[in-house]
Image 1 (cartoon, helix red, strand yellow):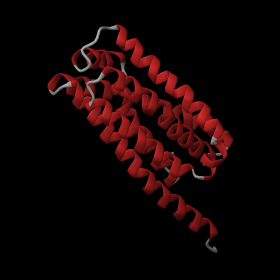
Image 2: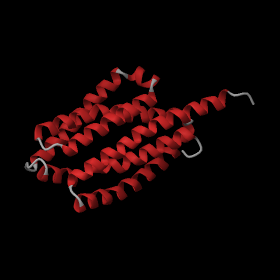
Image 3: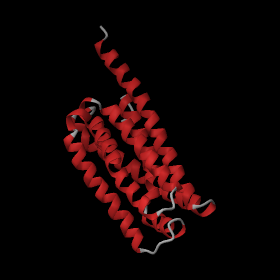
Image 4: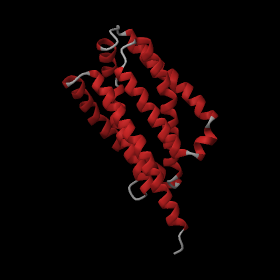
Length: 198
């Protein structure tokens, strides 16, 4: 993961998104529902159902766009991260319950686009015999990051407010989107190094 520049960048993006991903834990969503949307606990279920409906829709879209995503992995990562960041930012600022549900549905396809492209880029840059070890290492790293970020986001929600949690998450996802362009440069350098004469 650390020897290949493009994999190192994808891992860094995964780590940043792992921190941002903790904003969707149930406890924070419930606070958002009660303090921002001023709705009862059933809306916690509506929010989750809307998001998963969006991811199903996103899965169908990525199947339909699979060849294009394969040809433009880094651009797909950047576009998915950018849209996911934008929708998360709007979600944090929003206080209209039904608009929150629409944003959750919209997040699904953007997340799937980013995730499918990122996973594909990760897999295509690793020899198959190394995949189990690399995925195990990646899983450990992301678990550690997620557990620490849950504490961080809980602290932000308590010290500032719940909106700040989603705005911070959106900013982190945007950083990941920007890093996609660094990944594009790293990939071009790898290709140039491979094609240069010995």
